[in-house]
Amino acid sequence: MRLISSALLALLMSGSALAATCPEPKDIQEAAQQSTQDGFEGYEYSADKGKWKGFAPNADDQGTKEIQLETLTLQNSREGDKSVICRYQDAKGGALSISGRK
Image (cartoon, rainbow, N blue to C red):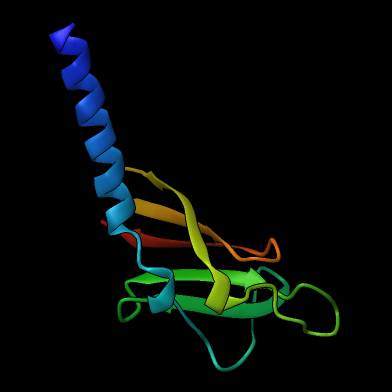
């Protein structure tokens, strides 16, 4: 029983540590100008002096932004061998993923 408790505690602590590596939503910045990635018009996003990067296409053909930065919340994160991916969502359902190298 003690082994199971220790394993659960370690798992919970590692999840918290991983989430702590993701930038705070308030630290994510949007590029001033639109750009194109993979044939989609949208905006680039970054945090921590460019160590974290992401891209979100426009929500429609009129150039409406997909993301409301002021309402972003961290939803989850995933750690790979070389990077961490952090997924955020805003109040209207817009989603943003940013990644950073380890």
